[in-house]
Length: 168
Image 1 (cartoon, rainbow, N blue to C red):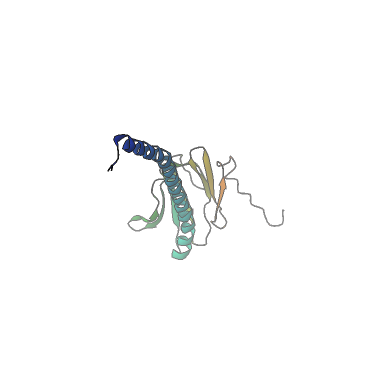
Image 2 (cartoon, rainbow, N blue to C red):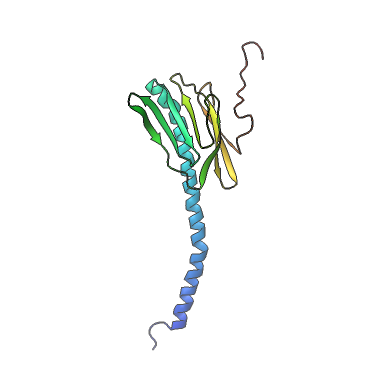
């Protein structure tokens, strides 16, 4: 009567487990990274929406700032300087680019737009890049609302057409 396993049997089991791990681990890492990207993008979308809501609720101007590193923050001017209302973390594999500000001067590394108490904003657009894919976030002047489209910021992103009364 034989008890236990031979060295060959144990070696075969270890090789099979190693092969299974080699197949499963990369997919697991990819899934986790994809989930982190989705969570980050959603946090950016939430902070843009919250900018308008905070301006209306507080009855004051709120500034949304964005950086190339992917950090976005909401601030409100106060007596002691700007007070941070909310901030996102860096996006990891996601970067921000293609900043377009419709009213204020901005650089490629830093961007800002303001939301006003009546719900309007200065407007603007930026692009979130992850690998070869990108989405564009546009903030409308008239109502401060956000639209998200796939693809890069177009060359006319700051061309918000305004029709004068009776001319269309």
